[in-house]
Length: 338
Length: 170
Image 1 (cartoon, helix red, strand yellow):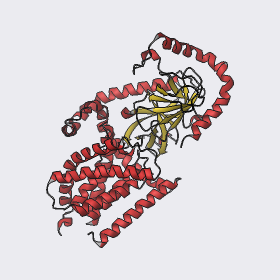
Image 2: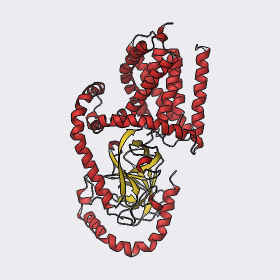
Image 3: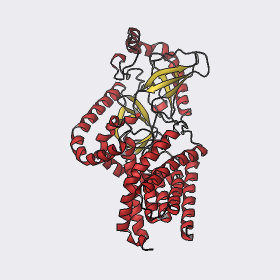
Image 4: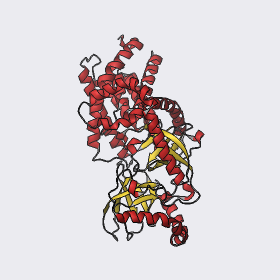
């Protein structure tokens, strides 16, 4: 039986933990936020340092596909870590980073987003079921809460918490995330919400009669002032639709363009574009690296037509209702945030 | 002695939290993230007893919940890990010499901690828990815990014998 002193210690610790829980559930900026800033300052510095050493390994996922020999693989890798990281970080990771930055620049210039680049330095544990990552930019770099985070493939998520030098990003696949989405080439809007699974989000159209087909790409609709989400960012494509037109429970499954398990270089949108970039940020369908399954001539023609039509479209039909939908969509995106 | 223990525990935990969030969670292993913090709590409880074990659990949980990438309910991990540190310290014999038994305890603690965290956060209103993924996550975290335990328990044992020999006088 534990001694009296230990029992007192345990009781104190449990009461302290419960106090944390209550403070956290109560919400708002309590004393926890200063504790968070302090802890993040200490841990963040070390995380950044470690990230420099290990970043070549975050892409080594494929070599872990087999179950057998994992113990020895981990031991081996840890052994090789010190040796290889020196050689690798100089060449491979630099090349990968350069490629990621190129992609990011392509997207941000196509959409005229003003971004601050950052690197993912930490990832939350899978057993928390929360899709959150830490990045190495904070309020000192101009990051604010609810800014949009993108990478070269499209939407990553939004800023959840900001510390002076680090921030927490909640990914769009997290359960707490809801993004106002628009079907590219049409004007149908709806809500894309995370399911907690990395390869599937749910898309619910606001108009149950709207047409939607498998392979349709979605972009963000954009909130007022570009927060939490700036407009025109590619989200993903429709891979499955349950229910038929007219049914209330018509939900489409969307596969995100961004592979959330492989995040490295991301960009935080400091300022959204003055004009909605419409569908111009979406990669041309023919040369999509993911290999979409709709490479028939029809889809290609559609995409082309859509590209050319954006200028006209912006002037006539959608403009009439864009003022309406703008306000509506902004409310939708905001209202479903939590 | 208390101060030296605190320094040892604090540095171990800082290293564990940083390694867990930067390296282990990004390896892309199937299922759970290897739970180095739980294993560290188990190792300290085995080396120094229930009191330091519970304290390690509290500090480790708080650090995990507050440090950057986490969006969990702050304090939940502390509650779970205080229980882990206490239980391991009370029920395991400090003179237990079979490393595999101790590693298995570390694995079981990881599984128990994952289950308890999922249950508690569901009770407190978290919508994140996907129940059909929980069994797989629990099983894999037991496996990873066992492997990490095999490495961490002797390491922490050695460190604490070197750095806080007073704890072994009784």
